[in-house]
Amino acid sequence: MIPPPASPAHSDTAMASSEEDGGPLFDDPLSELNRSAAEMILLALGPKRDPLTTVIPMTLIYSVLLVSGVVGNVCTCIVIARNRYMHTATNYYLFSLAVSDLLLLVLGLPQELYQLWQRHPYVFGEAFCVLRGLTSETSTNASILTITAFTIERYVAICHPLRAHTMSKLSRAVKFVVAIWVLSAVCAVPLAIQFGIVHQTLEDRTVLPETAACTVKDPLEHAFELSTFVFFLLPMSVILVLYVCIALQLKRSDALSRQDVQHKCPANHVNGNSAEAQQQSASSKIQRGCQLRKSVRGGAAASSSRKAVINMLSE
Image (cartoon, rainbow, N blue to C red; front, top):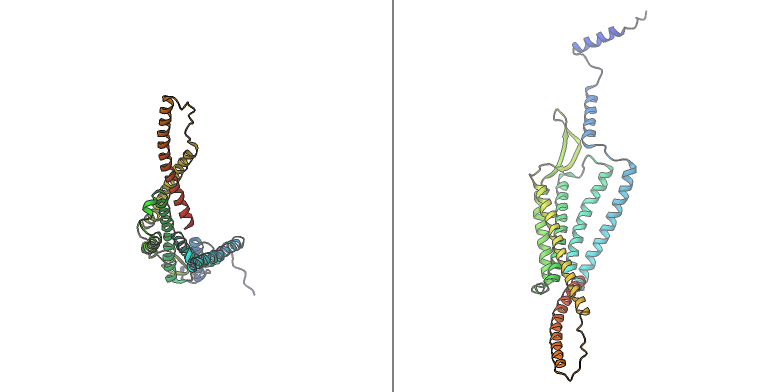
């Protein structure tokens, strides 16, 4: 005979007794662990990639930026290096900017492209993680300092043209560029050594290799705030102040030029036989002489400023 099916109450009693006796549960502990690990990864890092509707357009944009940026900056460096007539202070600053952009593009965008399709785990290793942080910080710092140095060159050439000729512009630009890159690399080291591979762990301290991520591993106190002030807020303030001074100087020079053109001496229609006419004629000559000297000084100042602007644009 087939025994009658057990009642629900009997089944619950049997399950309870099995648990009390230390018997196996219906839930597999390994599957439970895998499920908790997957939930941890999803909660901490999100999905492995975004939807294709986001990933594909971003991949196209990144690819265009990478190809055009590399080709454009390489061409800039080659043209400046091969043509001696382009070895000027301005072009040396442009060369420095092109090199910094190349480093950011070559060492940054390919990794960003890969991580569009697979956010985690990080597969490039800890050495590349630290190297990328170092080059990224160095290139960013060098770009900002190069723009600041170029702005200082413009300010000196336009507002203090006599001081600009006390030292060769080309040699000064070379020294500035070398100092900028050395300073940028030295200041990037404290930020770069913070980076490393970080893994998520379960409550029982089980390390999850699938959660490997390149991020800040050993943070330094106030490092980010100090870097932001020194390499962003301070240079931006200097650039803003100097360009305001340049604009005021150019406006002042333009006003002097207009006065030189518009200011004319009034004609004196008098009878030359009278003594009063002779006095007025002498007074008029004195006034014209004074006005001529002022005009020459104003015109010289305006001409000096205009020449400084032209020289900065042509170098």
